[in-house]
Amino acid sequence: MFRILFLFFPVIFFSNVLKVGKNETYKTIKSAVASSKSGDSILVESGVYKEGNISITKPLVLIGIGRPVLDGEFKYEILSFRSNHIILKGFKIINSGEDEVENIGAIRLYDSHFSTIENNIFENNYFGIYVQRGYRCLIQNNRITTSRSKSQEGVGDGIHAWVSQELWIKNNYISGHKDGIYLEKVVQSYIYNNDSVKNLRYGLHFMFSNDNVYVSNIFDNNNAGVAVMYSNNVGMVGNKFINNWGDGSYGLLLKDISFSKIKHNVFESNTVAIFLDGATKIDFYQNDFQNNGWGMKINANCMENRVKRNNFINNTFDVSTNGTMVMNDFKNNYWDKYEGYDLNKDGIGDIAFHPLSLYSYLVEKNPSVMLLFKTFIVDLLDKTEKVIPSLTPETFVDEQPLMKKVKI
Image 1: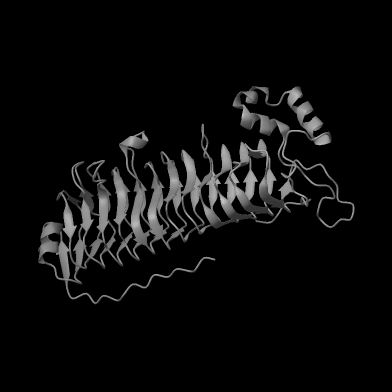
Image 2 (image 1 turned 180 degrees about the vertical axis):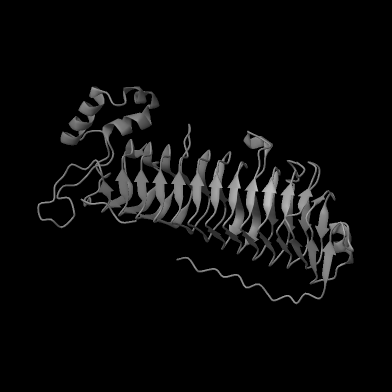
C-alpha cells in the first residue's frame, strides 16, 4: 500500500572553502555568500551574527563551527534558500521576525530541491522551518523550540511544509510552536522518530496530504496529538500518543480520511485516544489503548473501518458513537472489561462482547450525564442493558473477543 521512499542526493564536488569569523578573511556571512561560487563551502566560526536576511541563491554548504548564532533581532526572515542543493549544519538560529501574512521565520525554502537542514538549534522564532514547494529535502537532528507566545495566534509552526514532495523529517525535537509539524498538500513524505512535545495546537497536522507515512514519533502533552484531515493513504506506525489532555482534545483526529493503516501505536492518557469523523476504510491493527477517557469516538458517518487485535485497557469508555447504526468491523480485540469465558481454551471468548456501554451512549447524547459517573445508577443501567439490550446499537459488537492481551 505504501511505497518505500529513498532520497538520492547528488554528489556535489566543492570547489572552494571560505571562512567567516573575527580573524578570518570574511567578517560576515553575507560577504562570504556574495564572494562564493556554486558548490563552495562556507565555514562560520563561533560568534553572534546579526546580518538581517541572508539570501542564498546558489548551491552552497554552510557549516557552523562552535555553534555560531544567527540573530534575527525579531525583525527578519533569517535565512532564505532560493536555490537547490543547499546544506546548513551546526548553527543556532534565534529571534526571527514575525509576519502573519508572509509567515516568516528562521529559515524558508523557496522552491528548493535536494537541500538539507540538520544539527541546528532553533530558539524563539515565529516559524522554525518553512518549506515552500520543496522536493526531496531532508530536515533532521534539529532542536526547534520557542517561548514567544502562549496562544496559538502568537506563533507559527515548528516545521511547516506546503505543496512539497518526498520530504524526510527525522529525529527532530519540536516544542512550544502552534503545530509541531504541519503538512499542507505534501505528498510521498516520511516523518520519522521526531519528538513533538507541548505544542499549542497539534503535534503533527496533515491537510490535503496523501501518500505519507509517519513512524516511531512521540506526541506528548500537546493540545492535541495528531490531526489527519482531508487526506488519503496515510500510514501511521509505531507512534506514541500520550498525555494529550484537555476539553475537546485527543491523541489522534481522523477527519475525512480514507484508505489508511494505523498499526502498532500506543495511545495512553489522552482525553480521547482516537476521534473519527468521516473516516472510511481504515485498518486499526495491534494498537494499545490504555488509561484514556475514551479509547475511540466514532461518529455515525464512519464506515468500513476494521478494528482488529487491539488492546483496550483501563479506559473510562472503550468506544462511543453518536449514531444508531454501526458499519464498522470489530474483531479479535482484547477488552479488559470483558467478563466472558473460554471453555474450549482457544484464546477466544465464547460469547460476544458489546464494548459500547449504555452510559457512554447516553453521555454522547447528553454530556451532562457525566455528572453520574461512578454512581450506582450507572452500574445498574449498564448491567440492565447487557441483559436486555434496547438502546445501544446491536451491530456494535466484537463477536470473537480475545482472552489475552495482544503483543504490540
